[in-house]
Image (cartoon, rainbow, N blue to C red; front, side, top):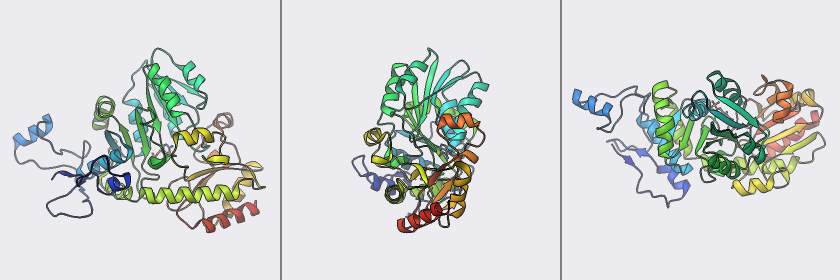
Length: 399
Ligand SMILES: *Cc1c(COP(=O)(O)O)cnc(C)c1O
């Protein structure tokens, strides 16, 4: 079997590449990619086994290292991102951890934006320091703060933009320049923009990570993650770490996520369009302190959004008046929109970050990240926009 790119070249549109790129067709000529649910592979001879392990003979050995279905997913997602190489992981957090830990050793220093998904912040703030890696958290939008945090031993920068859950933006090209000047790399967690609307590698980042659990699956089924970078970055920092420590993606999950990539542009474009319609409908609502959405009048950094994102997001941040009790009344009054800490799903989901994803932080840390008691994160799904707006309005009335 060989990788069948169906005659695709980089001149083909992303939509086309997402349908065909990376396909490995077996002797049966299946149209839908096969699920190779196998831990290992048999070799025709002991010599062949030896050659696989030395790398002289191409092919698969063991699913912790690689698997045909996982390989198809990696090739397809890399083509979409415009990255030379990709490695799939069991979860988004495994991807974040691999991208960071793979580059670091005791004595190194990391600079990160402080507005982060709770688990990303745990890795930076608590996990890495346990192994002698110093970390500095900065105010992401303040480029001067990134520059001032650099030390001779700074190895990597990390950020999310838009950040979870505040949708705060960081100037990716600006931070990439500071990283380059400091001889450090930049890792961007691009989950909130989705691969459809933002291309951090083109903005100067060295590595992009996704939780494939979110928009890539898009239907709330499988956990997954992916690390994307140049072949050199993957070989130097990621490949051996993943192979030897084992946070591999299951072939079953890879198959689901591979098929999901085919519809990603359709789903995310529709979710984004609906999110924008909702933002327009609810902006200025009497029960809201604010509504943040990364586009136009809905975002204080709209010019930056226009510069580095080709579309908005499927997420909206709402701050309900009168804090936690009011936010809970709002959540509990929703009928179509479900309460869940996930995002990027076909079902619209709402979460109260202060008591869920960001619960373990002190109120001071939450305030510093912009996670107030009234903050609600809305992930817009594929339902009809009119039904969603009616549901949201009715729930706000109930506050
Ligand atoms: C969900 C999420 C992750 C973690 O992904 P998992 O697949 O749940 O491990 C990392 N970063 C961001 C921004 C996320 O939203």
